[in-house]
Image 1 (spheres, rainbow, N blue to C red):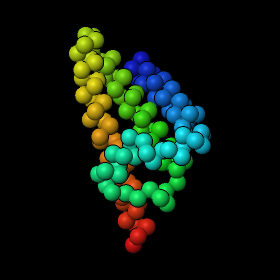
Image 2: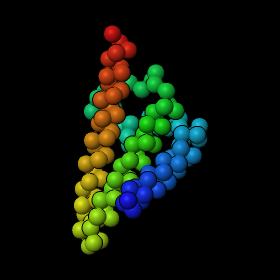
Image 3: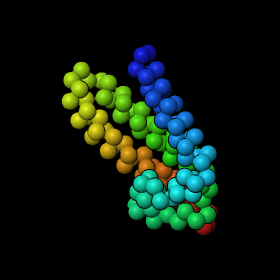
Image 4: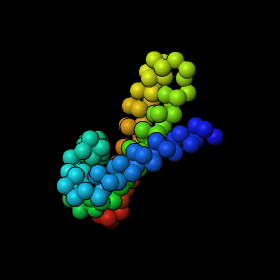
Length: 117
């Protein structure tokens, strides 16, 4: 139960931080399509974000970032040796970034195909 509570605390902290400083901030939200998440998605799926809602995309990225950070933190906590935990968490972090952002890209690609049909 303690691990789940830790995950929720980290998840909520990261999500609220992104919500306040990116989603609700117009200056930061304008730059959301040049973020690393958007660049990964654009590079793989060749998606045109011109007609997409910036606030919705920023919210999806905030949820994804919170999930990725919370999961990496939980993996780190699973190991008693901090060095092994850090190495495994870093590998998990890299894999999660690719998988989660590519899943978001797949969602937007599917949405773009439906819109064009």
